[in-house]
Length: 133
Image 1: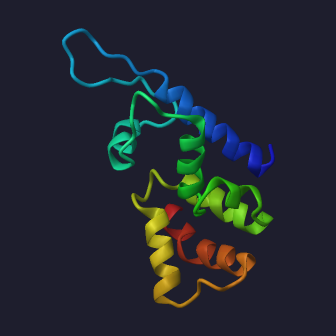
Image 2 (image 1 turned 180 degrees about the vertical axis):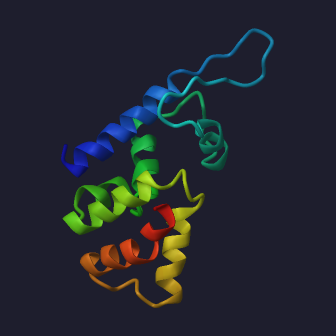
């Protein structure tokens, strides 16, 4: 599966998990039975999601953000190296809460925001992947 298809699948999986919502009689809040995003309750709160109007476009935006992009269209037009880095950021987000934010801060502190996508990927692998092994 190519990386764009991978990210599209993740957005659809987030929507699938969101669609498991149900409200029991007498409850004030929806409950979920997620299969893919075990932290869906946290995502709803952190992203201030309107549970009655969540869209695939919003899910795509969230996936793009977790993968290091500002918006979905940036992800769709990214280089292969940026997509590989995005996939790593996304896949390890559960293991390191705030990984995207930590990575952005690492780049800023070290004044590396303008490096090539290939260089950023190489640095991420050297610095962060050791944490996940």
